[in-house]
Length: 112
Image 1 (cartoon, rainbow, N blue to C red):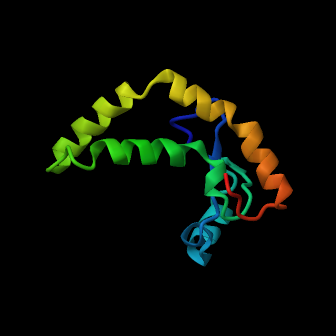
Image 2: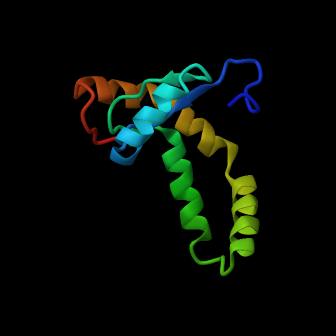
């Protein structure tokens, strides 16, 4: 975190999925809490994280194109560069709707 956000403004975010909330992960976060800020995320709400949508788009794009680990890296870089800026903007603009849906179900799973 200190390398990526040397200004100290970075925040660690996780979706509180079961593996991320394990005793080991929770203990590590507590032990390193002075190293970075931890953004508290609604429990098990991956639909709130637009990174999941981007990951899915990239997975779909590369699933039939890569054969070796180096192919995968090349294809991922190519596909990342091919993501339309409008697609990314649409995901960002969807956040108010995602937050509203999450509030309606009081932090539970959404249909978003």
